[in-house]
Length: 120
Image (tube, rainbow, N blue to C red; front, top):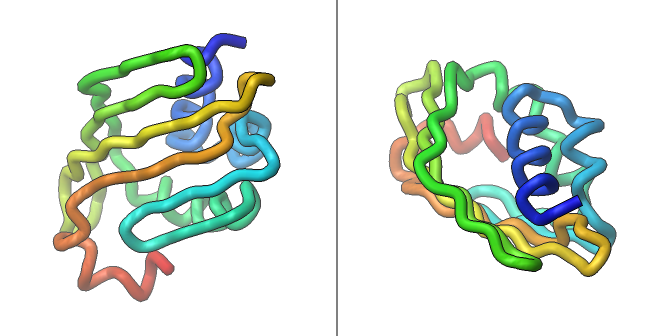
C-alpha cells in the first residue's frame, strides 16, 4: 500500500469508529502525541475512539500532503460539543512496510479544557 492509502485508510476508519481497521494501519512500535493524550501502543491510542466518534458530526478535509514515508493531513472536525468545529493537523510517519509508526496531532486545546476530564 502507498503512504496515501495507509494514512487515508487510517483516517477514514478512525472517523467511522472502526477500531480494527484503524489498528491494522498502525505499526509496533507506535507512538501518538496530542494535546491531551500520549500513547506508546495502538491499543492505548485507539481506546477512546468509540466515545470520540459519538460526538463527531462531520469531517472536512482541507489539505493532504504525502511523501514516501510521511504525510500531513489538515482538516476540520465538526463536533456536537461546546468546542464546535475544531481545526486540526496530523503528521504521520510510516515504516518501510507502509504502516504508521507515529502520529502527532496538533489543534487548539483551549475549547476542550472544560471537557478534559472526559477525554483523558
